[in-house]
Amino acid sequence: MRLAPFKKGSIDPDADAVEAVDPTYGARHIAIIMDGNGRWAKSKHLPRALGHKKGVEAVRDIVRVAGEMGIEALTLYAFSSENWSRPADEVSDLMGLLRQYIQSDIDEFDENGIRLKVIGNYKALDSDIVQLIDNALERTAGNDRMTLAIALNYGAQDEMLRVVQNIAKSVKLGTVEPDQISIDQLSGAMDTAGMPPLDLLIRTSGELRLSNFLLWQAAYSELYFTDTLWPDFDKEELQRALKSFGDRDRRFGGR
Ligand code: FPP
Image: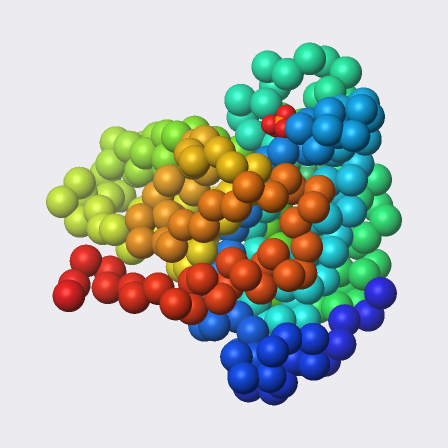
């Protein structure tokens, strides 16, 4: 599906005309903890696998909507470094869905100027998935409408540990002085390097925690929690989250 062309400041015909001048409300980078697939399936007496499958449909819709709104970067928590402890058949279902999603949507990413990025230690996934991801990263590297970062085998503590280990190696080699290590340098060494600062972090399904997601990047992000289960999260839900973001007074520690 080709996305509608978007001009910042244009009126989104689907939103209330008064507040639709910029549907992003100035948010450049949104991240989502997509929680509740299992409970969605359970509430409908369906197998968990179908909850995840419906979750992928919500991913597809939200990627399109975010691109149309003019969001610059969207980061989605698809598989955490702790998710390996789920039953093997569930891990395998999730990996199967990931394979399918990349294969089926890569053309659309390219057609719509979406640059794919992966955060987390994805090289530990099955080698065919690593290959698919590497091809998709290469193919979409020049796209600049929106960056879609998928977190795979991602954990914020693991990310920070990798950064610290790399810096420690440079210190040992004598190429970095400990006193010269800066916050900007650390930000630039995170998996999200090159992405805009994280403005809004959304978690679905009513849980009120960050679950080891983007702990460094969320330092001054606005947080938005909704009871909606991920498979039911749609354009209206995203608009509600952005409206709430637009109503916040961001002071970044100042007054
Ligand atoms: C949480 O639901 C969801 C996940 C484990 C991650 C999200 C995964 C998807 C949306 C599908 C795969 C994504 C891609 C991009 C291919 P849960 O199982 O924890 O739900 P519960 O807490 O209700 O049991």
